Image (cartoon, rainbow, N blue to C red; front, top):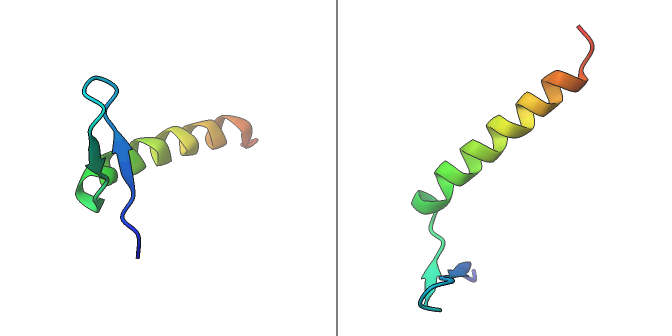
Length: 43
């Protein structure tokens, strides 16, 4: 399995995107998506 990396915009070094680094990003994205979905769903 290939490890996903992101590149630092300041120093241009590759940083491995491990699950522990990605978890807060995923949680924030999920929260934002659920909030948008709640606004579009009629009550």
